[in-house]
Image 1 (tube, rainbow, N blue to C red):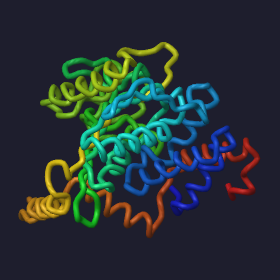
Image 2: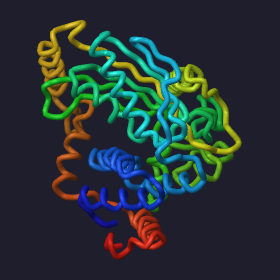
Image 3: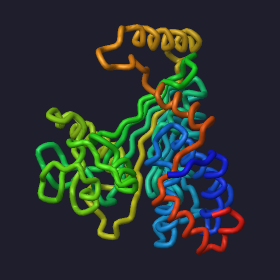
Length: 349
């Protein structure tokens, strides 16, 4: 493991993406989202993803500079075709438009399809929270290969199908939910494999349907388990609803496309708080509610209660000061890409 500043990792990723064919502006957007994920402690959605994105550009599965097309819209709704561009670029633009519509109409929603991986979900509803609105987003991977077995099954039929909601407040750090409907995100299993670490039992099944702590068994044909453990039908139920909103409502469909092309489908909605309550009052009460939750005495062995999003805020403060750790396997991939593009000297790799 090595430690690097956010600025250094941004410079490396940006240069590699541009060398792979991404426009400067798009590379900057992708890297902003990725490094924000690293800073928040979600390394599975950070710089580790850049070699994968470059592979997808090479395969034609991500199209840098792709047009962004509104297929259908009303005063409160938008259907966006990302035309296989970077998901970060297509989705951020869709959320900005949805926020603007909610500013006028108080409630707005959008779907986005045919786009690349959109990364850490929370980054999009947090855009709405900063504007004094409640943001919501769900996502699935369209007909890309699946990773999650439905409750009671052993073969993957669902994506990790995350959900994120963010609300405005007066807290030091933003209050938001960002969760997979599987027991864990697939990226965290991949991160453990890259770091040579075991994973907790209850995360995945091996190809024969047995519980395993070997993260490599997921790529060998295993499956993630749904959220909830013995009550995993709850996670499966949530995942099914996300699949319907992001796969069926967008028109992506379900199942697996034999090309294996990753295709994030998204449903997002924004609610203007001022249409329901005075914004200042709402933000104050959310802050008071968080303090009320945190005031409970800690359980035995617990550091206490954190409001949703607080751990990410604390991690961001720490990593902005101390740097971001990158596993050797990822650093080697970045170095190899830099050498292939003739950027080793410029990037110091």
